[in-house]
View 1 (cartoon, helix red, strand yellow):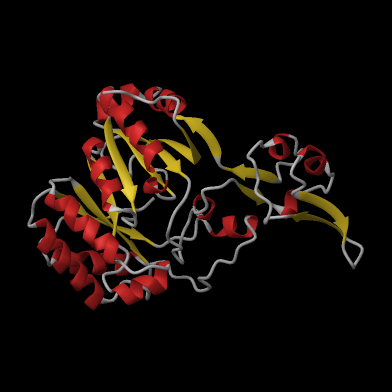
View 2 (view 1 turned 60 degrees about the vertical axis):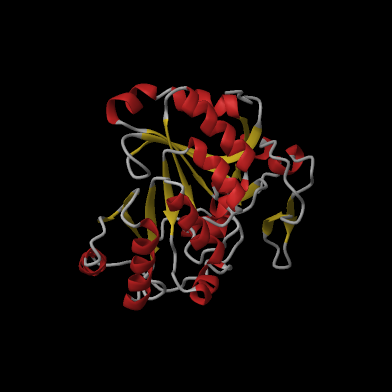
Length: 316
């Protein structure tokens, strides 16, 4: 197997010792870029493939160091009409990811989401915890964003992991070409495959696209024998209607035929990423508190279990 360890890609986070995203203890690599715009997205800094500037106004001393270090002229300190000193960010100009503004900010008010890494550098991070993978049956999970947004980069990471005997999983929304998933599947031990809504129109309203490609790719992956855990992000009042859950379960039962389905995971809505929207100067579209009570989650879990599918609620 020929490996391209110098292949470069952009990630926005790594997480070690995870026990939620695949079997055993895992290292999660978050790849930048996503084709969906989910109303509840908790990683908005992962949507764009480009570098994003995250800014916390309450920390900013308006010292101007970011201005002097930014060669792109993205940062600007000036007086507003009311006489207050403000920090403005030109978000139309593309950040080159040099991170000099971040490194030189004395109050840690600025952070750049996104870091260019080679496959070799990613593998070095992954291999640091190889002992945990061996003892726990764990491995590496590629997440995002969306893994398929940088398919060549993701493929080389997966190849390198498989060459080292490391268990591989990817978390995906399914919104990419079948050719990409067919190639990735050769090096993936487990797909963590999102199913956000079974109805195409409701799906488009919630995430910006219909679900035709997503459902088709899921069916094709089952057909070629891929191991799949179906993950269902659950948001109160948006995608938890009984008719929608029933339709989703019937679809999963039909295409999986009981083969290679490793389970259904319910991912309850949470608000952990809300503050990121303000830091990115974006609006969070969900205004109400849509978190579930324990009883509400148990009711959903019991309803899905009526379809004889292995189901669990995943609480991060």
